[in-house]
Picture 1 (tube, one colour):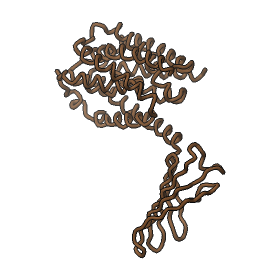
Picture 2 (cartoon, helix red, strand yellow; picture 1 turned 90 degrees about the vertical axis):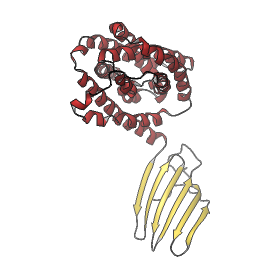
Picture 3 (cartoon, helix red, strand yellow; picture 1 turned 120 degrees about the vertical axis):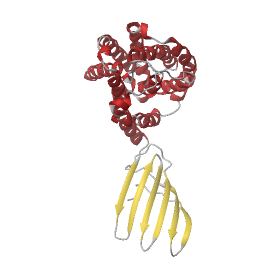
Picture 4 (spheres, one colour; picture 1 turned 180 degrees about the vertical axis):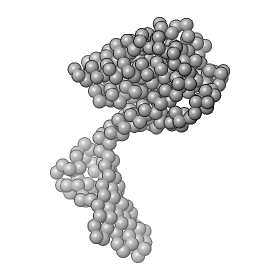
Amino acid sequence: MAGWFLLFGIAFIAFALSAVSGGGAGLVLMPVLGLLLRPEGVPVALSIGTAVSSVSRIILFFRNIRWHVVLRFVPPALPAAWAGVLLLRQLEPAYLNLLLGLFLISNLPLVLRRQREIETVPQAGNIAWLPVVGTLAGFVSGFTGAVGLLFNRFYHRLGLNKQEIVATRAANDVLLHLVKVVLYVSYGMLDRATLTAGVVVAMAALISSVCMKFSLRHIPDHLFRKIGHGAAVAAGVAMMVIAGNQIVTKDRIGVHYSRESSEIKIALDWRQHRVALELEKPAEIEVRHTMNPQIGTSPNSAEFQYTLSHILHVSIIDGIYVTHVDTRHTNAPDI
């Protein structure tokens, strides 16, 4: 129960910052939801909450919607979202989250720019590329549940002010999120915990939108953009940390180092593979690839076996050659 109250508080703050920065609540909430739900449940809960947030912002900022942007963005985004949902059922989202985190961190130079540089933005952008942006946004949103700040730069380049960005993004997102929710349910990706998290996020989003309606007008445009870039960097760092931990745990990634009088050993574990580099005296290098066929067995367990070793030898005396060894042990090699 305490976790749901904590989620509500963080979601309220995230959607408040989202109103100030022009989006990004979903990306901020992804690391938090990742601690409460299974990975494939995160985009489902985000879509439920973000759909409610988009509806509330459409009602509150309806006059600021720029429909010519919506009409070019939404049609290609919907089928792309379906493709993203299908991919979500096949692949591990943590790897994409890691890449998205790197992309978000690229906003750091924009945070460090001076105010005069930040204010230099186009007043009227070309809208011909909007279908492409819609396709990319729909696909990424279907896979992760949120795009938020990823595409905020494109809205700025259209010359939209802060109210127009909030309203137009909501109009672009609402149908997209509703379609995704239907797809998630139809594919059996909605369980009780995910539904509860989605309802909690939706309630926080609704209350936050009402509270921020009267605060947005008092925020200068340059500060609006800078907060958005800062939120993107913070979300990127959090996504990389969470996704990195998930990948390390799921794929059993580990680095090992040992040093003896006559040799130095460095090894990297990834899933059922181990790649080891051995520096031996007087002057020989061995690169060893060993594969463990028993996927899912802990390297520290008695049942863990290493087999099928391929060793590349580089020696100033014997030259370069390869050996193959079929070794079977009840314990992992000591390295």
